[in-house]
Image (tube, rainbow over all chains, first blue to last red; front, side):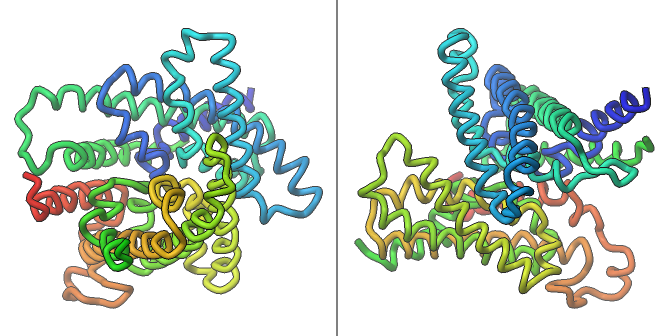
Length: 201
Length: 198
């Protein structure tokens, strides 16, 4: 039961308190790029959750069974980004073959995910972040952390898309149209999310 | 090909941050102080120049359908060099920038320049393009961080600039997360006006 409680804390922390976009500044390019339409934001979000979960477990295995035994942890950046690129390519091929309908909706977002810093970010953070009692994440913790971080990313992406869809009907000053107003909106959301930092878990 | 033109276009005309809107994560995350911003800018510039040069040299032997993974490996190699060099020589800066040093690998400016420029042009134009874009990125980071540091702490590059009464109770939000979004948003609007886009 205690483990379940810890998982709950991890979920709240990853989604609200340490949100990838609004607290950690990771994955901002897709956040600003594909948040103009709800449909594309949803597709991107699902693809990110999927890849982040898989990437977290894959990079954990690479680190523990390949890099640490051979004492080559300084190669972690290269190893992780290659693993993520290969994983994305693999996922793309599998989905294309087995689920053409899903490929149609997610396909165009998958190649973009390789250069999404949230994915490499979660892979690196899994070895930096620790439980409150100082224990590092094990395989299951890392996978879950990737999953919840992906949910947090998607959550904020969808909120943003919902707001930006409404901007189309509002008279915005010409100089603020596009990215500037999106950034100011994100700033307001970040202010709101700072409130979650007061949550005591 | 005019080398000077390739070099200077990154400063204003095609500034990677304000005009091309690339590499947002380090732009917002590392601009809490001018010192961090300069460190990030110089590290990214080094990687950008080196990877642009190497990629322009190997462009003829790179099969086009697997070029992206090859570019990523080249970039990751230089990022690892920067990572280890900074850990050894500038530990406080290394600690302040944290995971944003390894994350230079996925900075879209670097892969974007490799794809849009270095993979098509020769060695010297690519080096000039990389240096110009890198310095344009550094310039943008410096402007953002100066504003944020001044408003958030009353200092610039760690030195007191504003009166003591301000430093005692500064506008702390500017160095926190929301301040980054607001500062960049308003600066982008300003750049749009200056470029007479509106």
